[in-house]
Length: 135
Image 1: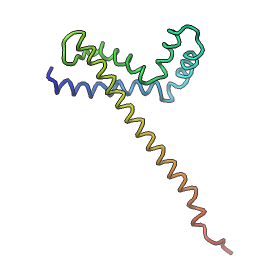
Image 2: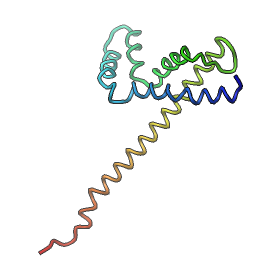
Image 3: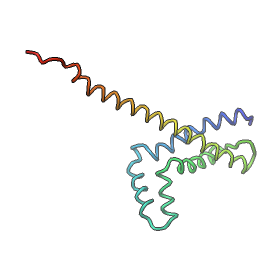
């Protein structure tokens, strides 16, 4: 596969990885299982058990496992054939997916900030335009 085609695959494959990682670790649909995993990650005694449950609460950690799953399905390799190509593509996909998630998080933060500003303007506007009471 040519390098430009590999880069296109990298950018495209990172999208579903980011989507799956974000959904499991942030969205409301997985809130209850995530809270249960968070509780287990803080209260279980054995370290490996705590770390296992923690990976479902951290988008960065979880993206490594989602990427491994996608590599098994797609057999995507970068630059080299064999295990070296898988290793490079694994880290590259994790990095790009986390970059996408960071952009998405920043976009959500900006939207939330704008909504708060609009809400504050709406709440203060009626008092400013009320004028004198009618007789």
